[in-house]
Length: 136
Image 1 (cartoon, rainbow, N blue to C red):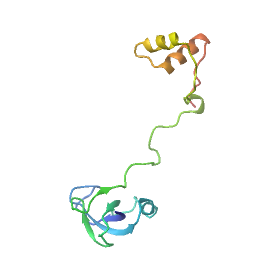
Image 2 (image 1 turned 90 degrees about the horizontal axis):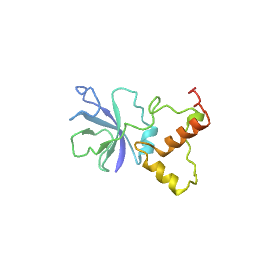
Image 3 (image 1 turned 120 degrees about the horizontal axis):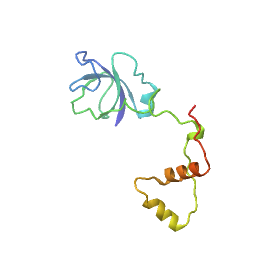
Image 4 (image 1 turned 120 degrees about the vertical axis):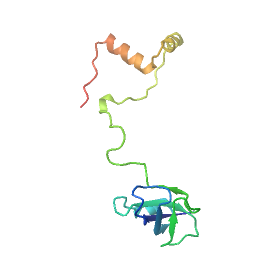
């Protein structure tokens, strides 16, 4: 298996991954990392990184529904603006190990619809009159 960068040649298909969309192999690479270095998703016509069989050559036309189409790999992953925003440092949760007596662990676990961490955080906040820091 190899990876190629292929450009869409069938202009009647105006979105990625349409059935029967035709792609011309522009370049072939031995692994995905090399293909990604040469890949620019913002250029037109639409280009994709595609996993192909070893017998295909540069310049050949492949069809999305054809026997050589294995997978389109040009989607997902890290992108600017994608994902959940990071929490401010004071609001980030950190795992710690705390030793508690068995009876207290059993009581905490018996509380309905309550997470251990939330229960402990709420109890300590009320006991010591603590306020959460404001998000910045």
